[in-house]
Image (cartoon, rainbow, N blue to C red; front, top):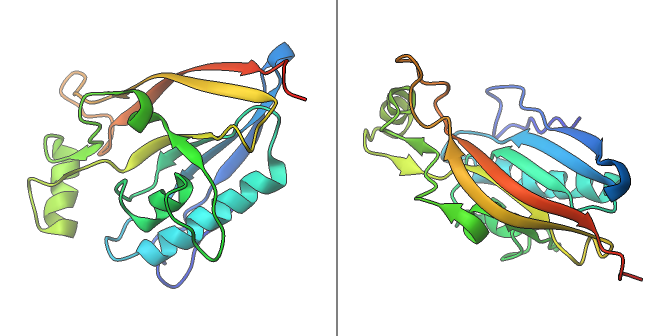
Length: 189
């Protein structure tokens, strides 16, 4: 478990959980479930969190590509997401995870939107804008260079839990469901 609380994000005791998932003959992968600081001005906390997540992966990485999934509370162009997707360095380091939505997303990918009344209440209170629509939720897949003996090919990505059931919205965020083809790479040396 990783506890990323810091002065820039004191509101909730956020936690990141990691588990090694055994896929039988295919191998094992590290699954990291996380959430990041939610305040709009807390990008510095999200940056530190992204670096800490990559350190957690480096310590426990398996043969198959690592999966990072969760509410990162940052848009794709934020520094924390740019770091995780290999587009920017932080603290003199760089990593690369593939954004499943960017590769195979269906639709807009907006996971926190005023269409959802649960999100609208937060957008009005936190942002001051009722028509606020953003992509804050991700599934990230470890890159080939960090996992030369395994592959997790992204087949599709879509928003789920994006409509009410019996008049009740499941959350203030939509979920992201990803279909992966996970396999060992027998040709790797």
